Amino acid sequence: MTQSKSSFMIKDLLGDVIDESEGADSDPENDACADGFRKEDEGKGRKPRRRRTAFTHAQLAFLERKFRCQKYLSVADRSDVADALNLSETQVKTWYQNRRTKWKRQNQLRLEQLRQQAVSEKEAASQQSSAECCPPFQPPCTFLSTAAAIFRNVTYVHGCPL
View (spheres, rainbow, N blue to C red):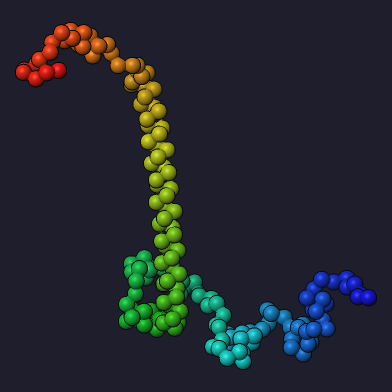
């Protein structure tokens, strides 16, 4: 018979399967080494993943100013920016890629808002103008039926049969 467990934590449920010496009770918040890499990535046969870069306010201000003037950086410009901000070229390149994505998304949202505004203004203008200046729609006048009655007996106009 199986003993029921009061806790549903993974280490309690699988305690007999997980070897405690593998770090089952280690804190993931403290798994970073001093160099910014994660301990969990060590020894897996692949390059360790860096932690997310926390840019300073000065670095962000510089990057934003540069981005406002120049949406794409050349290799030389990227190197200059990286040197000026004490960042790697890869960090600058990644920041620019992410910023361009954000910029495009913002432009699409603005464009959609402008479209919606134009549609609503057009609808409001058409409702206002139809209420103010134009009489309500009436069927076409009887001019055409009168003209047909007058010319009913005419079979030729300028030599062409009607």
